[in-house]
Image (tube, rainbow over all chains, first blue to last red; front, side, top):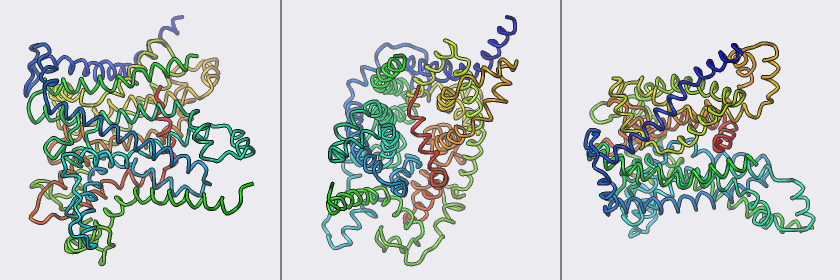
Length: 291
Length: 287
């Protein structure tokens, strides 16, 4: 029995660094930022509580609502694009022979790149002086105009398009591995019944991949809420604040505007937004596993 | 049976669509590569999709060793080595801690270990913006704000949830008899880890190395916030190089800098794509 106790102690000791990570660096820091959002913190953190002041400010700020709304436009474009392109590509690749590995490489390589690189690549493609507009004008269409990065209405869609380019591969990977798990007998019987391939996917395969779809949605939604690098690299949130997203808003209030309280409130709203999707998902997954 | 013609039409359609989509994925890389090998003069006068008439590595050389970020003209080289100096210690630490965690949380499960795992998993869905200010305060108090060690610590800490999850999910799939047999032989917890579990961990370790390498190398927000001017990690440095203004923008140098920054993770993907894909499929299924 003594040995058993010693063993438990050893295990606890080995897990201590991780407890420190979880309790201090993740949950402790999270709680600290939540606390800061109720204080009068400016350039430096302060402990003086001022109630809901920063949330009232946030919720009455036109800039914040524009930024928060941008998250839904960007997120909608991103999720729709990644899921529709990704699922179609996965279904096509699933039926191709192994020799199609070159295609897979082409669709997946952007995932290996950082979002900073992604943003810079698309800036090069979309920049009016060097990119697409310049190219088409040189072909003789002198009055052709395409300056999406300079448009306060459409810059957010450019961000969405660049992000789709980066992350579609994730959907492809998830769905390809999901489709592998589907019964081969199903394919045989579908062939005998002469059901067209696309119908097999639409009405038999995809409905079986509901949990793959949920995983993909949760991961993509998390990417949306935390999007920061790609915004800085592609549009810097501009023109003006037209393509700003919450992560950039919080960062700017922390380190440029010197209003830590307001930045913290924005960060808290970000976390609440993503947890509204993640927590139900995790609970669902946990229940499913217990059954 | 389907007629052969109908079959080949459909397959031509599939290949056509795959090809068009492939263009969308390839064009940004292609235009950057060709721009990086042009001279500045040629870049200004040629179209973005034209191949270089004269291939030159001048842009790459300048980007590597003498391009400026602000007033410092050292090229991207010192930032690359700084990134490596942060990456390897942090990656090693996160993987060792994650492997040990995964082992203890799978073969020596307890209620408290389950709770700890849950706390890590939910925590891994929190945007980093929630940690920046307390992290800055802590780094300041420890006197390691802006230091290489500070960034090593940060990347280790926030790398642990991912590595723990990867190893735990891998170990859960191993038969429990492995450990039970070793216990009967009288081996202790850590003896079993060293002599039974670690030797079996090569596949998941390859995956962990690839994912953690990419995660740390591609980091921007920590690099921007906690990197010291003059030795910021590479993703912050490449943005600084791009936004340093000259009378005439040196697009070829800029694109070469972007390509140099992109190469390490790109090469890993090309060499070990299979593991990269396996890692994404596994790393995405949390819990």
